Length: 331
Image (cartoon, rainbow, N blue to C red):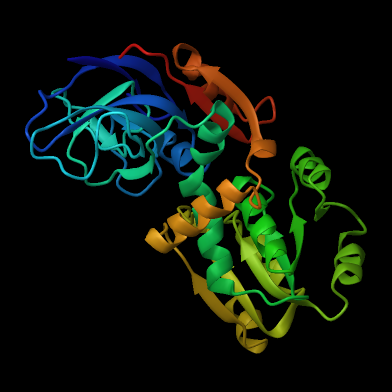
């Protein structure tokens, strides 16, 4: 059995390859892919060869929704026709799975798959639900910071995770404010109804102080830029909370000003990944459309054109946020 898959053969390179799948056994399920989505942070770092544990060649991605076509005789958890979320797979080639979502078909045990529905969701629901894990990162960050009604949250980075975190904070009646030096992201966040400011603007300090005269209760870092963290902490309240949730791979330039954090006696929290509670909570918020993913999807491609999505990811031009691939009936 063969399937097509996105493969990163080396850093900054991407291509489509055909992989040979294992024959399914008694404990396996066969899943045909319906939709996959790019994780705009993790996959970019894998593509650049900087993500922890990255090996080449590899199949990237962990956002995948598919339909179960076959179940081995010993499988109890799923039935043919079930729509599931997951990316487990086995192939014969010496190609590493960096979660391996972007492929047309999979053969693997049911572990790592989550049941979504016994009925086929519509296209819009498939697309938005595909982003559950990356949105779940924002959910976990907000859960760790535990905002209260009226509290103010300064979010560093108006990217996908930051925009999800802002929506989730607003659900809890907190007030999110963005800082980002990308004018297109600033405009994008404003169109979604959020306050957003560019630290390169001359009146940035004034605008932030006007947004939170007594200081921000929380600083949420989703960018991983030490200078931005230091500047944001300067606007934090004494006894505030700081969440470090970005990727911090640049060892030579990742030092932050611990002294100002100590002087303000700020509580520092970190998160990595999500757990089942985050997944369930995020899935529910997306289903209820309180966490509105659809406006964050800027590009859609059929699977045969998915390399165009990776060109966008690598180059960052034109402006992009959520990128979705729809897979046809073939393997």
